[in-house]
Length: 459
Image (tube, rainbow, N blue to C red):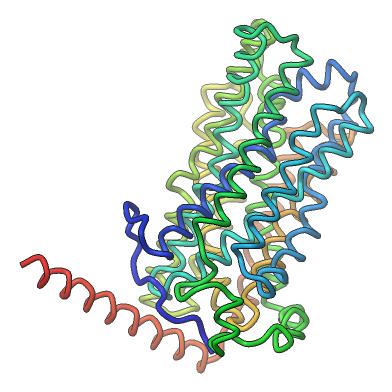
């Protein structure tokens, strides 16, 4: 049995249908999770000085922030299949907000690292976002829906680079807080908003177009939980899932890494910031670092939309070919950015690099919904975990004293370029291609019928 009544188009200004409510709530919840997840990154200069952190300790904080998310994403994908995305998101937001607020009580490197690791659990929100939009939208637009919801959520990583320094400045400049209390209060505020959003998610969304999983199972419209057993292991046995696991590590993992290091990278490697006062330098570095994440407002959507277009013309294999192109270009762009030492050259290179990073992520999740529909949560979780596994692996390059950060970025670019060739392992049977084609044609027909009906009612 498959989910019925999926939306065949994305009507951004419609908040009345369950599909569009899920779309808007899922991207907004992910946005806040991303904002809180990397809220401390642009303030790390203050934390580093207050707690006297070494480069190695900063590196461990970078690794810690994304490490637990690998496990959390594997678990949350399975949980979505069991209890549905509505309850999964509610619990993740409410429980995940606690370490975000709690990091304000850190008093040394050890306690700070523990909270930084715990905060990483909210990164699992991505899997729920992709799961929820995947079961709400039809094949003709699911790639675009996934890419847009995730892209606007990832936008939080760019916005936090700009907004958190402003919140920090407000606490110390307007309310008279010390720098030590300012960054703590800023994180507490971010966590509080996450908790409130978790409550809103429970009341404003439902699991599927026809209702919640519990009611659908009772009505026989969805398999019982016991029938879901074994689906996770079936997903694990599929080599295509692990190819996408590595590929997603090469795009989303890189994005997480850049979100963690961008502000410090600008502060440490560009003379432009060294002549400024600390608060002003942090604000400006955050602004420039935020440009990387702000590309999510449209770039990831482009990746998913082109994935849908390629799928329409060349089938599922077309989606995979598009994925190869953007991942390969991402690696080249990262190597170019790593060699920029003048700010005026670095910023355009960063924007081009960001464009391909976000499009690669959207392209990946335009493929994911077609790998195994019966284990969508498991596949989404495993591939999503790959993003964080990639970030953990990349983090080790930034903790060592043996190489500087520009060299580390160049090495990462070379690795990403090589990972593009893993797309050749993602293939589909003729039967699966035909099934996807028929589902796509059916969605297009339904969409045309809806437009004709709307036109006739308008007359």
